[in-house]
Length: 253
Image (tube, rainbow, N blue to C red):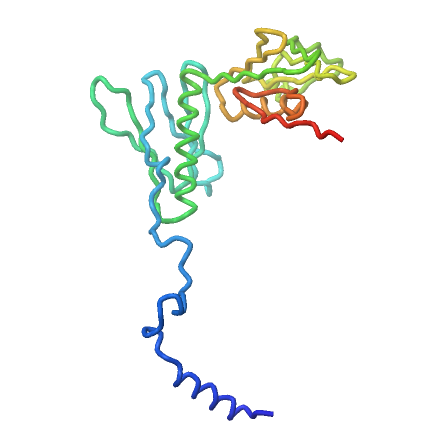
């Protein structure tokens, strides 16, 4: 067996006999591992966009929590349609931009250090939430759902009075109407609506949801859709907006 000294001598002589890497062809040279991205961190493209704000919408900063240790700011967005709140992290700042006499006010969102990944992510998120809130309280949002299937029907009906007393907090968070859906089950599907979402049925197979909170509107639509998710074989289900399902052919024996 070769001793450790003889093995080290053999390795040293082999390294001396090996040609330098510069003299080797390009395809035989050792390749250095490249990083995933060599470009420097760039600011958020979404967060740096200005936010237009109509004159009918007012932004009022308040404290997000009554705790003195909390440094977050809650921005109250008030408009003709209602009021929403957007929380701002301590490193996120909202600044008005200079405007002309004809243009509507614009605001800019910035962070303390755009090179920090977490701040850059919250930067774009805060800008999107604030822009959605401004559009919601000024013009509102609308979302349509289509019921595709034999016997599928939808109707809006008032919620019957409950025999048990309801707490005031739950009464204010729930609307006085609900959706009555017939989706091929042995029983009707009853879905209570939140207080800030209004539902209408222009036809028996169409549901229109309106509200000022875009996120809440999407949550209600997803809850309704979950009762009959569109399937690709017969094309039946509850479709949200312009949703399209790629059809599949049934396997034949």
